[in-house]
Amino acid sequence: MRRALIIGNWKMHKTVAQAVGFARELSAGFTARADRDVAIAPPFTALHALSAVLKDTAIALCAQDVHWELEGAFTGEVSAPMLLEAGCRYVLIGHSERRRGSGESNEDVNRKAKAALRAGLAPVICVGETLDEREAKQTFSVIRRQLKEGLNNILADDIGRAIVAYEPVWAIGTGKTATPGQAEEVHDFIRQFLERMNGTEIAAGTCILYGGSVNPDNAGSLMAQKDIDGLLVGGASLDAGSFRKIIDY
Ligand code: PGA
Image (cartoon, rainbow, N blue to C red; front, side, top):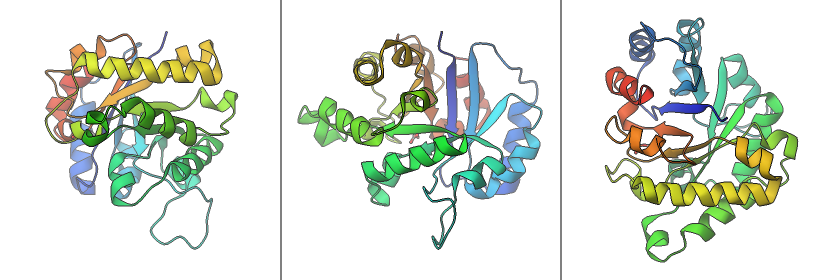
């Protein structure tokens, strides 16, 4: 059985002091559950401090991006070994805000995913269509291409450690969540794609997250879907109380 995974993506929110306060609040009275993993993705600056606060808790750390090189003249970038040392277990790759805002291509996503896997991090590879693409009935072709190019040449042994996040761009930060049925339709498509690519066993074991306006009220109905294995939560993860309700869906 797949374990659920809920990740709070803070984006560019919270100073170190605010992040530490949140982590203390969230971890107080938080007990690990056998059926689910929880992680938060703070800005890079807060990773180190949070790793100390969360050390003895079941809450893991996720970075929001990674560079594919190990080191070098790449101003502003952070490598996978650096993230591992800072205490990360996961790293988001190809979030739509980076695809759109920083011109990140499927090829970049592929290089980043390989670098993460090489370093021992679990890449969370984000895919999703825009509203125009959905309206033009291109959802499946867009997702297929993002997966095909993003996962290109990743060995079957490694692919089992990768996580896919379906985040329809039109649902991110808009309050317009995909209905559980709309999300499940794409999750099912993603699992079938993974099955054709890597076989039934790996596809059945891959964790596929949904993201886009998840909140405490819709988390349960999304998680009830057969192929929705977890949630990538933006806005609603910024408040410890609301994130706690989502974790406890
Ligand atoms: P949202 O963001 O929950 O605020 O829509 C989700 C995400 O971008 O990961």
